Length: 294
Image 1 (cartoon, rainbow, N blue to C red):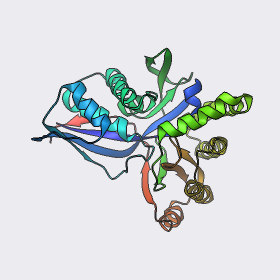
Image 2 (cartoon, one colour; image 1 turned 90 degrees about the vertical axis):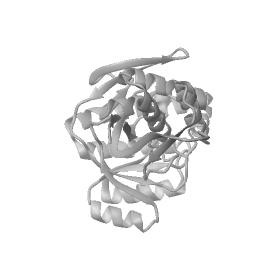
Image 3 (tube, rainbow, N blue to C red; image 1 turned 135 degrees about the vertical axis):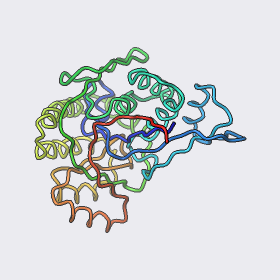
């Protein structure tokens, strides 16, 4: 069996979700093809792959991943691969898959949230810690609880741009935490991001692309205060705002990717390619992870 596992973006609420505010994520039509092939050594050099194989009790296999999306891009690569390996071997429910994949990722990194694994398992638009949508499931870890729901709506066309440098989730989360623990200013920013996310969910549900873009711009401006953007990301965002409805970093920051809602896609893509960055012309998708025989 071969597993097709989608990448994901966070449209609103990264970092703020760590402190209990809502976040909106979605799977995108960029799938990795994952399967397990026999190997005499079974050597895997990525810690989260090693831990996943150990969890499944697998030896002498090699995890083959076919994707054109770079790791460290902020598009959920580790969650996508962990989920894919598990699904190659187990027929879990989507809820259990999201939970088990998150446990492996958490044990490997020592931090994180189940947003990525839940989004990849459920597919479509997924709201974390919100009040809207169709309830999915809850996940708890170390006294923290996350609730998830699905937001039914039509897909959104988008351009995703890899900035060329990897972002470290651990480093960026720690950086933001220092700001947050200093006092009220950072807490006010998190509250504003939470409010932006709530508005964004309603705009997405209505299919109001202009409003979605406007709110993405606001969300990015708030995130910039924490110093998690880069010069390259800011150049990409400026182009995205000129030829699109909105643009923002997606994920932890410090590198990684930018998501843009295009208005003049032809000129947007042309300008971006002049920067020598990796550009994905894609859209959200209602599909989550799946497997089939080939």
